[in-house]
Amino acid sequence: MAANEPPEDFEALKARIETLERRASDLALKSQIVGSQLLGQTGLDRFFGEREFWENPYDVGQAECSRRCIEELTVHRQACEGIGDPTKRQACYAEAISRAATCHSGCAQRFPPPIR
Image 1 (tube, rainbow, N blue to C red):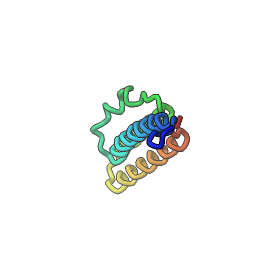
Image 2: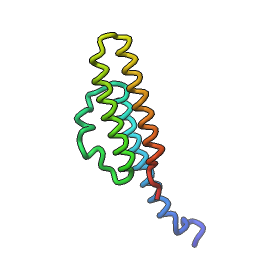
Image 3: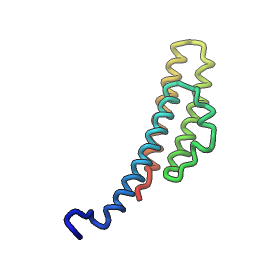
Image 4: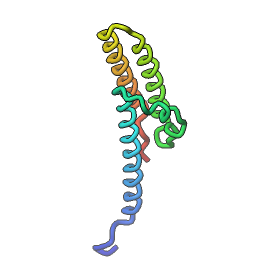
């Protein structure tokens, strides 16, 4: 091996870095989307309902777990909408967001993305 040549495993490491960067990008996008849902922006309901969003070979377990969290959040928020008292309604929304955040954090801990 000449002084200017990279080690033999350099290409393998480079490919692994690219794979990990794609995974990080996928997870960052999903985090943004889930975060916007948690903050009450509901324009993405149809997007979350599509199977393609949840079908990811890298983190299927986490995606399914997060999907359940979103479904629970949606049901809880719908229940909150029926509360007439504004103070109680806001408290209900806060509880829904807190539960969803806890649920999503639990998903991330139970289903970390695999690193190969």
